[in-house]
Image (cartoon, rainbow, N blue to C red; front, top):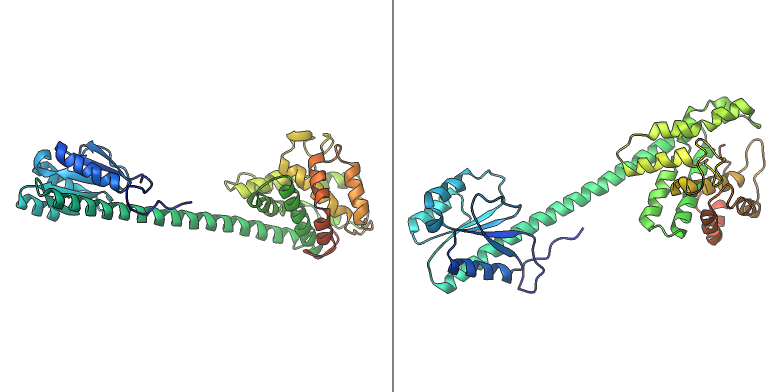
Length: 353
């Protein structure tokens, strides 16, 4: 987000804050317009009853508008009203009453042109500076809130991932490696660093549904039978159910990955048998990353594959199990992938099913 430009000369960028000249005669209107233009602001003729946009400054001619009406309107302004008011009158008593009623400044009109121009300029400078400071503060607050919201989402991901991995250290190591592979593939596909980081975080939830798989199946030291495999395959639906319904984009992405990382490019995967680009990109990326780490990790019922063997397996399944573009992206960054798999960024450990 960008703060508005500070007040300056006529070369300054136009300020979104409007200035309304209320009941001003043509001469005063022209002078107010010139002062506003010199500050990069806009001015329009209007009435006190016009809707007042946030940060509006009012230049009001008490004599032409009607002093009683103007003073009543001034006194009726709520405390939170941000509009700055410059009240002009030939009558010193009216100017004093306007100040007492809440005007920010007063000036004599008709009056000496030079003095009038100076009062207009100074009033508008103060009013616009206040508006711009308020907007900068508001922008800064919004940015802080956005950053805090992102931090909350990241913490939710980390804590839920920690809960899912609590039963097995192998799971934690697999999650970190797999998520890094996702980040690498995403970046190589042209996603921005922010989007790649987003995917790295969301991918850590891909196996959260295994919290619902019994230990007897999850830790079985051998191949699963058909019934056990059906229970294991249900972890995708369980994960999606755990994560569904969130208003947070990061959790929504995690839900998508949990639900689709076992889909196959050729449509023979699970749980929905999606094919090709009907599988969300995040799920297609996660499928490559997940399988690669599983192949290169030792399990109780199988030895780990070498990195070259795993690479060859991905290439063999390119266009069948995997999105060809995702496989190609991983291959282009394979030296970096190798460093991660060999413990350069995450301790190698057996992966869960």
